[in-house]
Image (tube, rainbow, N blue to C red):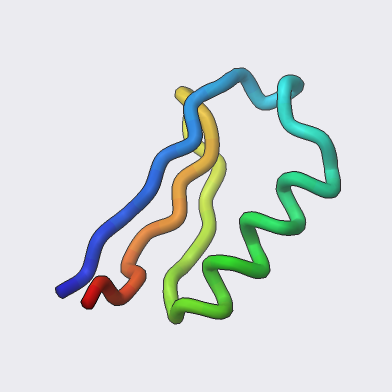
Length: 48
């Protein structure tokens, strides 16, 4: 089953390190990272 996670907040509320960590998590779980108006989103990750 695939799922997604959204971390809500304005783009300037996230540090570069936090954004990099989210990208790494997306890659680790086979998903993709994108920046959306309401925050950051990791989509298409596998859920057991």
